[in-house]
Length: 633
Image: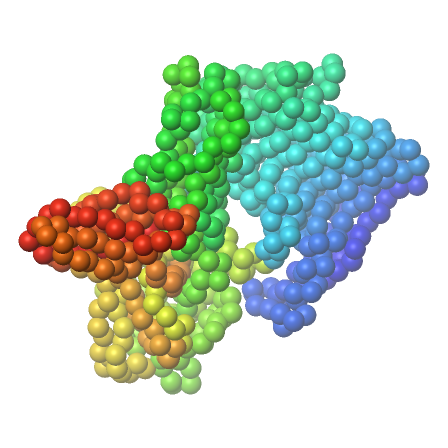
């Protein structure tokens, strides 16, 4: 079934019995023609995509006894919906069935006897189209409070990045040998009914990243079925497994759940850190608040919950809950910032656990431009550009060396996206909304053999003052071999062989852990300060040049500057009085340099809490000629 846009694909019931074999349903007729390029304008694609993602149920199963074999479907609201019909539910066996680009995989909603057995069932589950109303709806398998049956999934595979993997609210639901790659960072939840997770292999790593939290399963107070024991057996993940059981009436059989990074076994008596938000599982998490929870059977003193943000311990944490379970929040983040955090918890029995990671708080509307979308040449005219390019808009556009780009070693990458120029390849960064409809997100790589490679990026960049970030990846990065690139502005000669440039600053790419493990890299000046660029809303050509190769770059982002600002300094006797405005809910740090050539800023005063009024900080140093700034944490 090609190009469907229905509300239901197949509705099976009325006591039917039979086999459903090799039924393939493909919505992507509305998106592309096979080479990744759209055949229909967005005005036609968007409403069909929205309707399909919000309403389409591919298989609705009622009173039936069926075998489903090798049935495939791509793009729907949910793949299989089990319902009650005339007091009966489905009795179904699925073998080698596959759903792709679905909001929800299986919905178990039959308020009647039901048996479902699924073998070798891959599920690719994510918020297709990035609809805000579905942000917390993505799930691989959901049983409702209505469900009165048994469901077992054997050798299932999960990809895509769900909000929660498995949510059990009723019935007896189990997963044996569930293989997970990209999936929920929250884990799974059992609110009611019985839940079994056996021999589950959660991500060993994702795109080379290994700092993810343990795979967590939470059993709520209402979980459990009399005579059936919940199970969490023989599971493993890179950083291990964690279990939270709030039920006083339902036990959980737990053993041999491993952390591969340390070969340690889950200890259910250890404290657990969970629900960290924002996390590193997505980009553009526009918030000023950090939230997480910490529990321990032994209890936790709030003074033993330590949060470090960008190397600084924060003190104005807000706690709700009780000693055995704290909800923690911190409202001192700034919008449009990049953070590295560490959370450490020590319970009253002396057990210590830590969780860490990095995330951004950039606005989803942040202006970005793709590394592979450098200037192009057409009909003998070079230096051409697309001012407001859509996704993969530079597909198959040629370019001329020395004018649009420079590459000392050609032919290392693929010609899938562009036939000539900087070397492109399919990237493995976190999925952005623009690429959620199946387009390939390319990167520019193979810079290790091409020091001096460059590409020109001409656009009408938005007016304003910005910090610039490169989204880059590298397995290198020792102090002597840090990969780097410079950013310049082309002041004259664009489209010719004689171009003049002025260097702005440098991107220093750290060891991110792998060629496809991406991180944010800020543009800095020669003194290590974040460089700010001012745009007046006119056409400008920026040039990114490889200084020391070895990194891959996905895209660049212009982030509104504003986390660093000037302040007023008044001399009072032998000291300097520093005055600056504050905003309630934010925390400020005063920093200084004795000379502008110093490599870094020194902290004068930390954790100045904003209250909406002017704050005054005194520096007793006299005659130092210091330079000051205020940093919003």
